[in-house]
Length: 303
Ligand SMILES: Nc1nc2c(ncn2[C@@H]2O[C@H](COP(=O)(O)OP(=O)(O)OP(=O)(O)O)[C@@H](O)[C@H]2O)c(=O)[nH]1
Image (cartoon, rainbow, N blue to C red; front, side):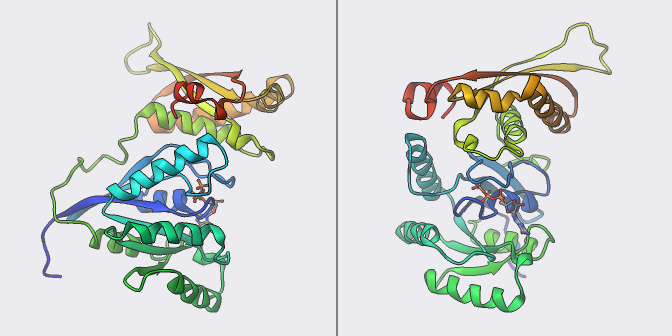
């Protein structure tokens, strides 16, 4: 390549719930920062990961699933997604290889066509889940869905197939520009938001009901424990989990508090890895009635 100019800019991944956006973000960035879960729609906050190369820097904005709004929360998410789409240099449209193109994908494709100026790369995710001939047929379907000028690329975030190629392709659409972040920066998401996401992820694990939409997690306070030796600091992290109904509170807490203890243990491990220091994690579950439909409560909970 003769082009040695440095490039930098923003990309965001869109796609219907469960399309593999968070997992791909992690694979591109190479460290766990976005939250993955087998439940749809767990990524509420815009989380940025940064891919560093000697000649380019790609800032990834991981957006919540673009979908038809069901509640006030859904409407706000979509507004956030649209704003993000207009601000970035390139959009990666994730379509899982193991599912046929559906109304959700068509809805997003139509939204993307409205963008006009922003280039779109169609990323066919989870390619490890299908046979080559199924993948080939799927790529043709995706091509028919997209504009002629759009790039199409298959990838697997799980076995690493073409992950670097996806970075290259996204980076090729970035404008010339200097580095925007230091090399060791992986995300500029405030730590508290990441802590809240890790607790949320742990609390949703294995819960087989409508909880995902009803659980909001807020970090109340983080403080350094006094009187600890300098070589072994301890952080006290107080986190509030808001649910909408008493019945959901019971689910989160579990019999005799057993489930909440397990959530705490799992989340603590992740948060300690994130912060690189030992923590004491204090979890409280509260009921905020119908918070999803109440703009004031939503604001308080950070939406
Ligand atoms: N086999 C395989 N599974 C994948 C791959 N990428 C994602 N998955 C799985 O697909 C599921 C959904 O992945 P996520 O990354 O959470 O999807 P998402 O699009 O961020 O989902 P939302 O947050 O709901 O919008 C998870 O169970 C992942 O483990 C892949 O490349 N191969």
